[in-house]
Amino acid sequence: MNRKVGYYSAGPNKQYEYDHRQDSAVYMDKAFKDRKLGVMKVAYEEYKKEASWYAGPAVVETFGERPFEPVNKKEALSLTDKQEKLTVACTGEAAQIGQEYIRGDETSFTIIAFPVPEIGPDFQKIFKETIRINTLDYEKYKVIQQAVIDVLDQAACLEIKGAGSNETRLKVSLHKLNDPEKETNFENCVADVNIPVGEVFTSPVLQGTDGILHVESVYIGDIRFKNLKMTFKDGMVTDYSCRNFESEEENRKLVKQVILKNHDTLPMGECAIGTNTTAYAMAEQFGIIEKLPILIVEKMGPHFAVGDTCYSWAEDSAVYNPDGKEIVARDNEISILRKEDVSKAYFSCHTDITIPYRELDEIAAVLPDGKRIMVIEKGRFAVKGAEALNEPLNSCGQ
Image (tube, rainbow, N blue to C red; front, top):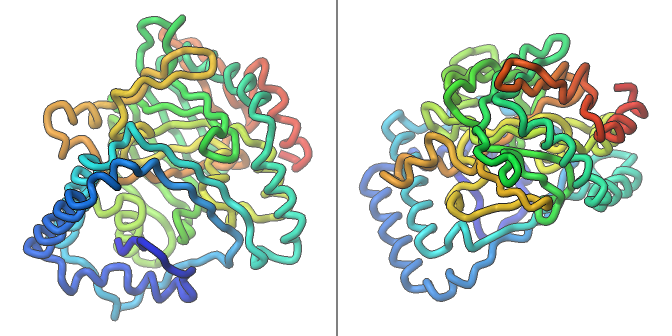
């Protein structure tokens, strides 16, 4: 929606920003869309040499502010269905123009997060613990995560089941490895750019990826979603809901605007297993799970992203794990459409949704013959070689 760009301050009033998130309803029409894209093209062309030098962003995030729960105001502007489609089209075409001048396979990024004093009286302790989390020994995690990947690479699919009142029941299909000695499905993420350490991730096969993803409480951006549910069929979102408002219509609009970015549906672009149980234990110790940014939360349990894959605009660039194996799961049935019509391949969004360990029962790797190998069982890691990940969970009574 009204994404901030350039130099700007922290928003002093999040409700105000939420109220005005769709002010483009005043002017959004086809003439504006075409004019905006035309000016963008001219600007990129004028500064194409400078654009070619761009290496990517270095980002420092903050967290710990008071949680925000939006209130819908009848006075707030809203986009019509036609304007929503124009906005989605504008975003997609703008991304294509940007890729002509700043290639996704030639840029990178680095991102890290720190707490602010508003997080509470334990600020200094939390800051110290965040430093520790951000500087964990990646060599240790590299070995542990490889043990997890060695099990996952045997699987045809994963089965994920929530614990207690969590209704998650998901089957996630994986790519077939033609040469397991040289190929892998999962990236061993060791915090070379994405800090802190702690996840293995893949781009799932959409066909056969089915079921319900449910999280009782999760923050997407500044907004806390209550009882968020998303249903998938062949990897595509077919239904969604939350319990932020009394009105089901308002709940669906919130999910569509914030998570689906006004698309009618999105594919599951990522399936990942977070391994940073140290971060989870810290969050439980200080009771701040709801205040942590997705950068840290995504490392604290399995997470699933809707939108583009992790390798969007760079699928043809070979990527290798520390063990030398090539990560071949860089495409899915949607992103591969770029070879025919790039406008059908990308959605210009990638939103992570994490199930915390306390809401997780199990993750099983299902082999082609139907045999199941437990990766996480009763919320604890069950893979041989990953036992150390359970030690922080012991300290917080998980």
